[in-house]
Length: 441
Image 1 (cartoon, rainbow, N blue to C red):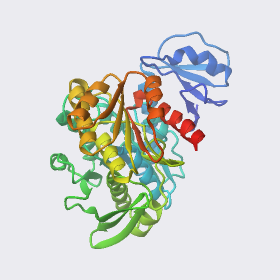
Image 2: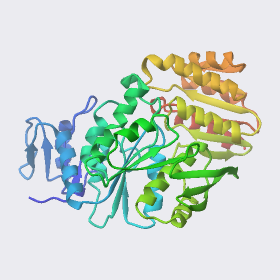
Image 3: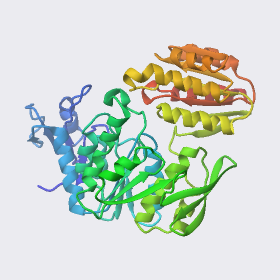
């Protein structure tokens, strides 16, 4: 029995005739409940972990102990058989943007697979790998985690030849407890890379934990950065027309780079993507040409002009460092009044109140004109902002009341930033703002 890996499905809504359905189980779902639906949609069979009635005489079962493990092992076997160079990207911030930038550069030279959207977890990564075809020459995959052991498992599945750790910051500190433990979890990638000294580890030279990560690597290392002497670095950084210009320096070569997106953090993302590409023998000219037309993924520092209003939609996710970066972006490019709509930063554990307070203080220090906060920790953000001298501060526990206060507060020429953790669904506020502000133009 032979079945192309691309014919494996875990979602009956996307299933095609002849697919093999895998009945995954989770805290909020059980794929076994959809086996009959899979049969009706034309699936040839299902991988299951518990006995259930056969829905049809033309249908078959493969029973295993753990259906998720089965999915992962199928993906691991598939990628191992193709034996392609694979890039695994992890880190607290920038993973998705680095992946997209690297893919844009590499795909101009080679047929390259990338993980779609946020397919970066124990399910998404194997599903991405199953899309690899024999015509692909490379793969670029994002590796996310919430707890220890997850990066280790993802690295087992991917077996990357190039591993990237973008930075070590406060994301997921609630589950891991400290920045040291976050570093330990991300460093699980290094153990996989060390299996072959020809592999590459890509590190941020400006991250204070990089020296410790370097000590653990037995493979080759390349660094990127702005402040410290990295092998791939940016010099002469300048903001221009909503984008950034800099000189990319590698060895003794210098290449002018223009990226049509703002934010110093995107310089780091571009440098990480450039380091990956240089390892794979892509020229500086190709890197420059590819980056000059780069577009950010949705809800990642997306800038819209709605009449006289400027809106920065950074609603995809948030942690303290990414919020501070977004605040600095608003401060640098905002026109007239600068207004922040900030939802809770989740998964911060015992440090949540103090970290929200610090973000509020940073908003005040940067001279933000107004702050609208949403969520359980909204008052902690507001308290910090007031301590730093910000007067127009408003706290809310639900979106409707926030929007009801925000809309009449706005004046023509305002610049707005919307940000919050994924669970806060701040894009709903962005949608309402676009509807209202477009209507009033």
